[in-house]
Length: 279
Image (cartoon, rainbow, N blue to C red; front, top):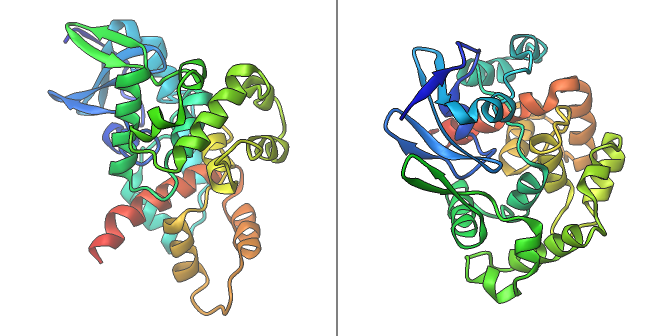
């Protein structure tokens, strides 16, 4: 694979691509094959140096958020032992800058699913309904557009192992494809207003809205609370509390993690998911 160097950014590539943000990257040689929007990409990191196929230079720089001041971001994390342990484990992991619809749709399909299952759904949707992309004899697939999904029937999506999520994804796709919901307009709204706008879509509650805001709309303060994060917060930050409500958790996160709370959340999430399973 012919590649060019993007230098040695502070980046843990493998962690970043497999930290529960995106779900379609496949190993290829010493690197990874996937799509960044409509751009087919091969990316690898050798002794800290980042390489991509020449045509993907601009896409990779944006998608991997190489412009985020990561050293500064990590320095803003709370100094408590829980966050610092996660930081040590995940140092260099970046929040991807994914296409808005792709991030939103992916997390609509993620409800009550493990990462491996979400990846299977993502790959199936791409192969059946996404645009074909070609890279040196290899065929990759973009995530299906809202228009492509809107033209389907619910049964088509259920055949992709979506279950009840099929109706949610189809409904969201039709609203976006028709223009009734404009993601670019939502991108101009303040955080709270944007979250409320997203939550009007089928299958989008607070957690999915925050995932979409963080991974697709680059709202780095957004702090999705899933079962792993809730467990971390309850067991490590509120161990002696009685009943800990969602309102208490929301208020604590906003105050404790600040403007880069989404980064801290992702580090806490990935660290817990990979280490707590093993006790």
